[in-house]
Length: 175
Figure 1 (cartoon, rainbow, N blue to C red):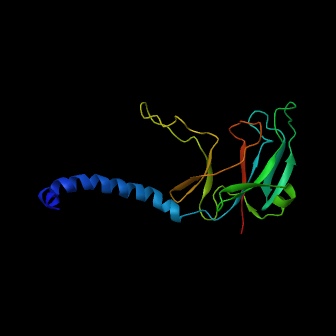
Figure 2: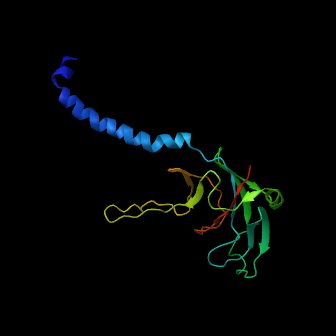
Figure 3: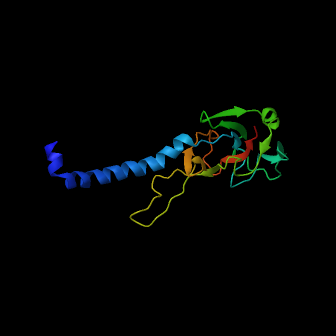
């Protein structure tokens, strides 16, 4: 205790950087604990890919999921069948659903949810050497982002496909 009294300036000089680190870390991570998205969403994987633009295409028209056959079919064996998934934001998990189940949902196809969140792709980085932030970037990752909070989602990829655009956001499920 006497050492602290003798070296108050030294103790303060050591404590201020530690308190600043705690403050900055708290301001970054604490909002994510209290601000959570409320709306689940529907997405599709497979079937559509950048190169062939073939297979089944799902679109939302007037709040209902519609299935359109595309006219340009790729060569056999180049794409997988489209699959539909419901993403539960509270449980952070995807569940495969049938087209009939998805067709019965009331969907909002806006990119931004009613509570101001959106699904964005990974791979955002940049910088100038030696501060290049692209190393280790997963371009296939997807995030739910909004209110200065970003959370990586666990989404199911189509088996056998490794296309950047394998994820197709369809709409937010209206409650």
